Length: 145
Image (tube, rainbow, N blue to C red):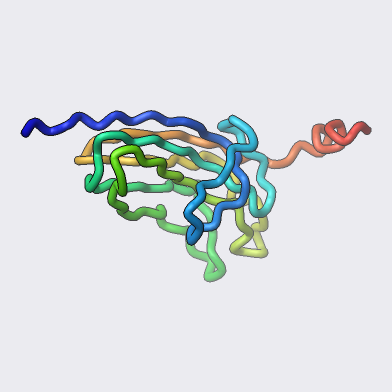
């Protein structure tokens, strides 16, 4: 039998509602964007729909911009593997802004966060997000001041 060619589509990217890794539901998109304002607990990433690839192994990686942990060390990229669970499957790859080192606060989150998803050694989805400092003027302007 001929092998099916997987069909991969990035269905959304940007800021999402809180995601519970133990829940079956994926987070909901709140805003399509690649520029993320550094605020604690902001959830961002992308959702990919994968068809005709049940059982295939996916490798994912999140490259952080130099976040410093509680021990003062730069965090290594976060990576892992997951198997495609069905022939029409949605997968969320994302992260949250956290203050791991009180000395640097949110500042160690600033910069480019690159998220990649690979199957059979080929990149099937990739997105780079730029985490920036909050613009105080815009913050108050959105509130009517």
